[in-house]
Length: 506
Ligand code: BG6
Image (cartoon, rainbow, N blue to C red; front, top):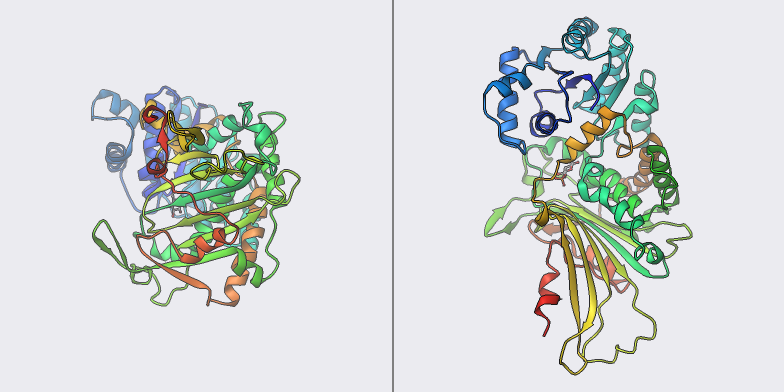
């Protein structure tokens, strides 16, 4: 990892505590962070360096993959961390920050590199970028990178404005927009599995694939984020970014070279090929918008979304989103991509299911039971692995055909201690590898697609369907697939009950 001073804006916030500091620690423990680095924690509230380092220790003890105790090694690590209370709108504070940053640069022999990490509300990005320049923080030889968190805007115009503000100060190649799903092990593995295996690529098209299903389900409600979420909803919180990114990786052409621009160019082509919904009726026919009402899970009562803290009692914000999406290009003409996400669903899981078409003129169709379609499942989270469902003859039986499974469970093999998305992304940003960060053209095209749905919804709220908390979402989401002769395949290992394992055969 490069030598750098890392400036963390929003250092007392949840993201820093849960993800960033543990990521720094894991990288340090793995030798990916050498000694030539410093971290400046920035937030408004006053804190001494000692208090800040105590908070740091607590966050690492609670959330890091590695155990830590307050010994000499810890003191060595913690000595790289300093805190400064900063008012983001006051340029004088930035001048003071420059003094501190330059002295840390000298102390740790960093060489001028700066990584500015904005774990802040996006409304503040513009002021920070402006004051970084005004405060002289960019007047030093070395690289200067800006890492920003989602949400990147509320719609295309607001994202454009945000981007313009940032780009007045930073070049596109120095802006690292985080979509933490791109940092997940199995999301990065999709490309390798697709393009590194002879038996997938030839089948990866509308001749052989019937549909794809992307599920990103969560059991949590909105917790303490009601204020943010009620303004955002599942469409903006999950679909605009994580879901469309996964769809793009599943659908893209192989990049001709493995570099950040070539790979992102391929995703952009997918975004350009997304069929935009042309009218509210089309949105109604292809998109399901749902909100949870009271329900229960594991015998526990769960409140309705409208009764959650900081949520409007008459809110029409969606906590569930499902859609049928088409990628109008040569490879995917006619293949539906079904995507769904929601809060308060029965399991926490992210999976991509590829359903293959039936073989033509199948001689086994007349056997005692129906052939099931072949499935290829990418298990992204929390289980990591790939799973294939096939048809086979039950040994010894009179030609009964049964579904069997091949399952590669990555998280079972190497243990669940695989690097966290944020470790990988922080490491990549520090090395200047933007492959798994989103480029402006991707973000803007994704907004263009999403804005059409939001516009249709704002015209009428009557199509907000409800679902009991703890259930699999509104009935309409099932109908969406049933109308095409498909169904949502079970996720999270729930296929097991319906297939026979190779070892159980006979
Ligand atoms: C975030 C959303 O981007 O992703 C949250 O804002 C959501 O609402 C989270 O809970 C899900 O991420 P993960 O990694 O836990 O699946």
